[in-house]
Image (cartoon, rainbow, N blue to C red):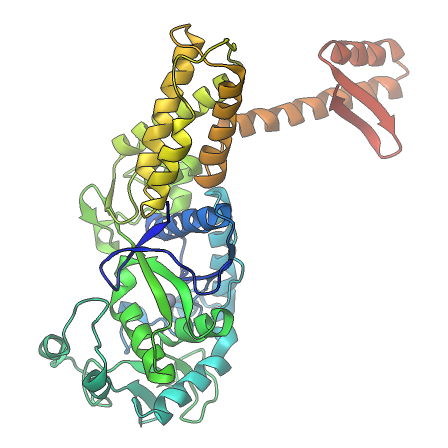
Length: 486
Ligand code: ZN
């Protein structure tokens, strides 16, 4: 059964065949680091974490590049106005790179909490100015860009004569012309839909570099084209991101690649859909931009209480990545309950009584879950099968069904592989319990140490003997007291 991926460019599911197996190159647009990550950041991170995990499970060697945008992304995603990070730095009276460092660290922390695996490479736009300048030069040399007042713009009309600007998003250049002609501040451009490859920095702009055209900074779409080519080659397998990046960001990346190299860079375009909040798009004005930290602490007026990182992850995986997901307290609470049921079944599976015969077929789940995953990463169907297996585990526990020792071992392995490794879900209760045990042991050993210091050997020995009854062994070593389960 081959893996199929829905390619946004061809608008159909295609069998996945990497360019140079067993290697797979995957590029995903990462965050612009000027604020805390919210639910809209969690979705692409988790979506492509699933792709990353599953491709590795299939035996591919995946080079996963997820960038950090630290310069060039202007407010309103347009070619005019302030840099998002520069603006934050001005308002907070910080160096732009202080803003970048602060929010990059917080983003990483959130991603770890969500159990999102680290990408193989995490390049920054500001660290690849030279590569971006080189690519702009190439596009100018090929005749698809022009310089104007120190800035360089992509000539969409010229490009569109032999290529199709809009082939990813389905937009037509004629319509773009009608919709954007009246915008002010566009005098430098031949056409309002031309986009910046390089912008001359005005005197208030904080981040700027020398270039053949001006002291300035790269256009937002350049970084992904330049860094994708640098780390994955002129042609690579998968490019992912949120569907909000389809236009103009990814559309422009396609145009840049063709203008510079004469061909598409990406073979499979993947886009995750959006998260709505109680049916509405997330937006600052609606006060429904709930950050991940607010979810984890419950500190937002729309939240009835706190929700754990794994609840957020499970909630997102309950929908197919190409469907919209609507956030509500009820939906999150249902997700939390469902996930708890799966982990209880997983724990129970480790203690089931074995029978001579199985009354149900559990091994079929391997093929069923594989089929679901290979059908464009259909995680909700995988989860539905896991619930079916959980029901069987409960039936066996209640004496209403039987499983052989082999099938029980299969069920245990199956939960571990699919729930923990492929869906990346962790039993948070188990983690909490083990943290508590660590803390209790530390406290007990400290009390024993104090007893010894006070020459109260009777108490010290009693603590050691009581722990021995629980199969806990303590050893005095030169690095202090160690404990272990016998
Ligand atoms: Zn990008």
